[in-house]
Figure (cartoon, rainbow, N blue to C red):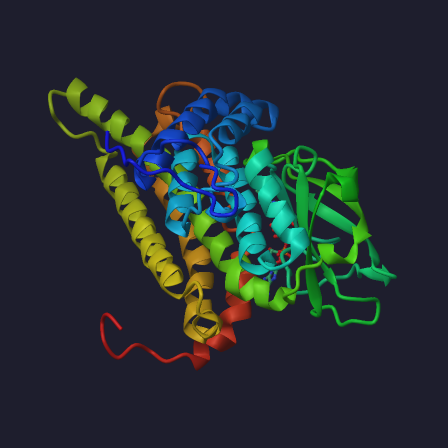
Length: 409
Ligand SMILES: Cc1cc2nc3c(=O)[nH]c(=O)nc-3n(C[C@H](O)[C@H](O)[C@H](O)COP(=O)(O)OP(=O)(O)OC[C@H]3O[C@@H](n4cnc5c(N)ncnc54)[C@H](O)[C@@H]3O)c2cc1C
């Protein structure tokens, strides 16, 4: 194994984060393998009982992956978007719910890092995410507003440095299990629905009262129940940047990249089962390909397109991560939104083709070639911020941005 003789050192304290570390890729690979192993063991039961994947998330804590993105100076590993999405993909192959929980948590952490640095409150929270491996949940969906994130009903009430907020949070994945929440709200009682702020806090500053359960087709282990969310605490819980900026620069790109990687992982797991099925069938027929082989090829093709699309957008985001103008551009915003739409469609396509390749063996809920769980899980992807809504929102921008004149510009 490739061992690097350097440790990640915290410049503030001089402490090393984890003693002697392997090089970056090996470090995350080793840690992720431990989490994926725990996730795979409980994946079926998580789905069956709609239970939170506690063993997998505990393993992520033990491997310090919940704080992997936190900069080294705040006690984390300073992981990049490429590192984080690789973990999402690997976990997606093992357990879709675990991967989605990890993806949502990392999206919140990215907002904290990018838009909270320089704010005492948010820097303290970053340190705690790294040292205590806190799990952060997300509350954007409100009332019957669906995925209309850029519009809030509940408003922050402020009085002498203290704020309060009561929100009908109809869906909060792992809300009951999280250590903290990142949520949006209208800036004040007289603010427009789109004049929003983002807040981050731990359990000391909120209560949750369950208003809805989570009895769904798939992604059952995300335990995305509905709650009345009541927040009380210091005004400094509000991020210095307006939500509009956080949304465009970090929340949307990181969410779409992490979610897509998790869905690609689900697709890869289904394709792998189809491959084993076709190989076994071909062996049993003296090398003769079974009739479903063409569907396996189609599944592989969808997965290849999906991975290529994620890779292009990952490089695009990484190249412009610190360039506010580039992130705000029509081209980038269209690309990162279309990634979510296309990735979700391709992931569904890949799993569906894998099921057709396996035939009844894939359709069955038992047996080594079953892809029923993968299909149910991946069917959440076009709905998780509905593709129709995204396409309607970017229609005007798509019309305004030019058609490329060269193949690779
Ligand atoms: C697994 C999972 C986990 C989730 N976790 C969280 C979480 O942790 N926190 C959180 O806040 N939310 C979470 N959500 C909710 C998610 O963010 C969206 O709010 C939700 O999926 C949108 O639900 P919807 O389709 O009912 O709503 P809508 O987006 O309102 O869609 C409803 C219907 O209207 C149609 N529609 C909407 N807009 C348009 C349009 N402009 N043009 C044409 N048709 C349109 C859609 O096609 C759809 O048929 C989660 C969702 C899932 C599936």
